[in-house]
Structures are given as structure tokens and as C-alpha cells.
Amino acid sequence: MLTDQVWAPFNPNTGSDYFRYVFRIDQLVLDVARSARQQQIVNAAALELLGREAMEITGLNSYIAYVDDVLEKVVENNAVCLKVGLAYHRYLDFSKVESGTAERIFNSRERSDKETKLLQDYVFNHIMDRAIEYGLTVQIHTGYRHGNSSMLDTGEPMQLLSLLKRYPDARFVLFHGAYPWTGEFIVMGKNYPNVYLDLVWLSQLSRTAAIRTLHEMLDAVPYNKICWGGDVGYIDDAAGSLELGREVVATVLIERMDRGWISREVAEDIALRIFRENAIDIYNLDL
Image (tube, rainbow, N blue to C red):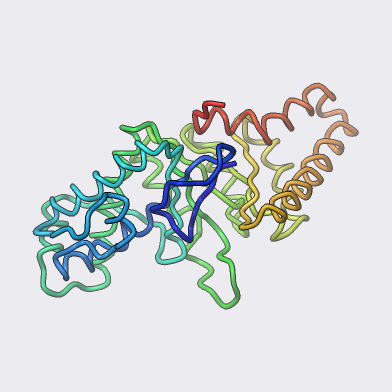
């Protein structure tokens, strides 16, 4: 099981050989403006991971060096991928920012919201470069955010198009069927060789949407690019999520078999890949 410890992202100890560490990069991106203002690292958990009590930040290069130190540490602790949950904090349009522009913004006494975003974009792009260097897959939350009355458009997946084009050597896994933008989600997986699709959480949001989306995915996308996750916080919920996922996949595959679109052997291969083999390949898991 891949474990995104959202409650403690800088703690690489998953507590079991059955779990693999997923490192959530959100705070590395979001903290840059505050660290620039205070001229020190503001994340105590990150400092603990690095074995430091404090870390002075004198310029953009020193913040990037801190980011590199953290990424090196999580790789040493066998992280299998990076997770991007930034749609809960901002929009997903990560623009290309020149180093001179980012440094000027970093050194400014005051920053507009637009300038803060550009600074975050610069750090994010640097992390993508490191993800390629380390061979780390990048998971991205797209679509609906949990809770009521939240922003609905921050996770709209088409915002990611420039990012996907900018980093053809990176491997991206888009999450949640990008619900309710499931059509856009599918064509992004179809169009970009570096994009993989994960239906994690979609069956909990809507069983009907999950069935429809998986049908469309199998029409349009090679099935070695499709995954299924649980996205729950407790082991009991993980078992329930798996059962629901099996029901949805079985429903789709039986309908396609009944229509004569696939054989039983192909259906079994699709199920095995969705629930196991694709994840092993995408995350380079050593089992």
C-alpha cells in the first residue's frame, strides 16, 4: 500500500513493511514566501527530518538548497513517489518562471498574490526537475475537493496542460477521475504518454460516475495506464474501498464481456493490471 501521510508528510516512517512512503511536496512549495519573509525555514517537521534545529535562509538559492536537502532525505528513506495536493490551496496552472524573476520576488519586501504564485511555481518546477532526476513518479490531486462549500475549480485538470508538455520525461499520475471533469481526465491520459490515470476515490464520490468513466477509459486509453486506489485513513475503510472498487471494475468488465467487446482472458488481465501490476510498473516497486 502506498501511504500519503498527509497528517505528517515529513515523517518517512510508515510503521510497516506493507506500506511504501509517499512524500507530499505541498509545504515545500507553499512555505517559500513565508520563509523568505522570516529568513529562516518555518517548517519544524522538515527541520526534524534534516536533523536540524534551525536553518537560515539568505536568498532564493538557499531555499532551493533546503528543498534539495529534503528531497535527498526522502529518497534516502525510500519514498516511491511525490504527491501534489496543491489544488486544496491554489490553482494548478504552474507557469514557467525564470530564475531572475523568482529571485527578485523572493528578495522583495512585499509581494502581490500573483508574485507569490510565481515564486511557488518556480519552486514547484524545480521539484519536477528533481523528480525526473530521482526517477520519482508524481501524483496530482485533480477534480473535487473533500468537504462542502469548497472551491470547485482549483482542481480542474486542463490547467496542467503546460506542465505536462514542459516535462515529457516526468511521469504523472492524475487522481480521482478529475471528477466532475472525467472527460478531460480521460483525454489527457490518451494524449500524453507521460500521464497515467488513477480512479482513486471516484467510486466513493459516485459509483455511477466510476462505472461510466472506466468504460470510457477502456474505450480510449491503454489499460496499462489505469490504476485504482483507496484514499482512506483507516484500514477498515481501505478494505471497504477495495470491495467497492472491485464491484465497479467487475461491473464494467462483465458488461464488456456480455457485449462481446473483450474475452474473459482480457478481462482478467485488465483487472490484474488495474489492481496490482500497473502500480508495480508505474512506481518501480520492489516487492
